[in-house]
Length: 127
Image (cartoon, rainbow, N blue to C red; front, side):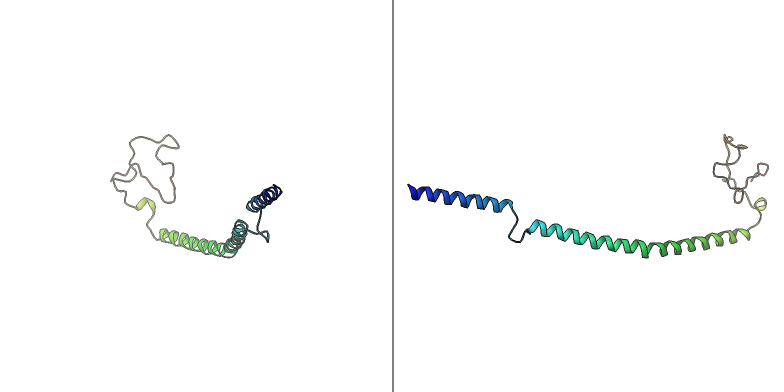
């Protein structure tokens, strides 16, 4: 009986140790989950640093170049307009400025996006 009791105690000790091992960390305090989380953090740190460098060193020069390009295209566009005949001398085709009724704003002839530099409508002139 004493031997049986000792065997039972030994089995209980083994069981508790096995249960503790399943719920605790490995010998060095690092299991697969901890290693994976550390790897994810290191990867995130490197990726964050990469995007920070991209944001600081490539975006501002790209914005400056795009702005210069837009400015040059804008100036070329208005230079082209300066060579065109005056608005009053241009041909008005029948499909341009069709008015079935007056607009509710202004003099009733100009659209909401009317620009006096590029839009012209002579009510007296019929094509």
